[in-house]
Amino acid sequence: MKTGGVAVVTGASTGIGRATAERLARDPGTELVLVARREELLRKLVAALPCPASHLAVDLTAADAPQRVLAHVEERHRRLDLLVNNAGAAWRGSFAETGYANVRRHMELNFDAVVRLTEALLPLLRRSAPSAIVNVASTAGRVARARSGSYSASKFALIGWTEALQLEEAAHGVHVGMVLPGFVPTEGFPSTELREKALTRLLLSSPEKVAEAIHQAGPGGRAERYVPRPYAIAAALRILSPALVRRVLGAGAASSLTTSTPDHR
Ligand SMILES: NC(=O)c1ccc[n+]([C@@H]2O[C@H](COP(=O)([O-])OP(=O)(O)OC[C@H]3O[C@@H](n4cnc5c(N)ncnc54)[C@H](OP(=O)(O)O)[C@@H]3O)[C@@H](O)[C@H]2O)c1
Image 1 (cartoon, rainbow, N blue to C red):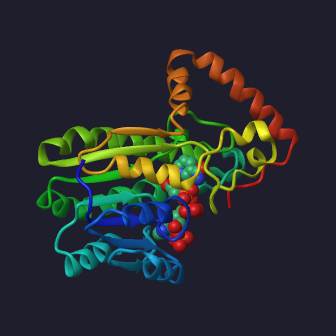
Image 2 (spheres, rainbow, N blue to C red):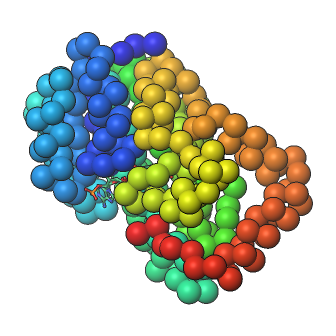
């Protein structure tokens, strides 16, 4: 697997993106471009990393965001070896409560922004081949839960599009990898209820473990990685035994109506 080179990491100000920047920075020859909205957090991370790095504070849903990222990369590096599409968010709520507005909000950030940034950077990735794109999807993009329909819709869309891109770009030397995290306590995904009990804490992973999987899905690497790996079983069961999965998740949804379920944000 090829390591080092120029990498763009979106959503690098916190959580999985930040851990990914720290992981990639350990490879000799790495140069990083860190993207998110909160400039101060990015600035501090750039200063703390052991490799050359720069930052760009941008809202990835803005119309000019893809061109701003492209201009930044071309001006400083003229090449791109790895694009990590990690920035994303979830705002929980049932469809009846949150409606189309919530679906649209998720699609704009978790799907449209990824597609638009990839469109802008793909010619540079092809010119820099062998190179790679790693899209951070979610187990929620394989198995949907109550009150997360909008989030799941955006990640199901991301997975479908990523799988086609994998097939299309292989011939151009652009490897497309995908990482599907389960529950990982971070600022935007606190997993508060799961952290409360010893048994459910076993379901949790860490940003560092996801970052390692993202690293493994980079240039010449893995096509798909669940983190933790056993979450692949949930995705397989959804296809092999949908009635069982519906029963388990249906019971969970019923109990969440009687307990207060905090929103992700
Ligand atoms: N944690 C989990 O349980 C989990 C599970 C499955 C998948 N994932 C996926 O993993 C990815 C990273 O999530 P995380 O857990 O690390 O959450 P996080 O700590 O909340 O990080 C989200 C990152 O996205 C950035 N971001 C959000 N909106 C943005 C926008 N409009 N423009 C630019 N950047 C934006 C945030 O930075 P700013 O606020 O500074 O812009 C932040 O750096 C997401 O795609 C998420 O769907 C997470």
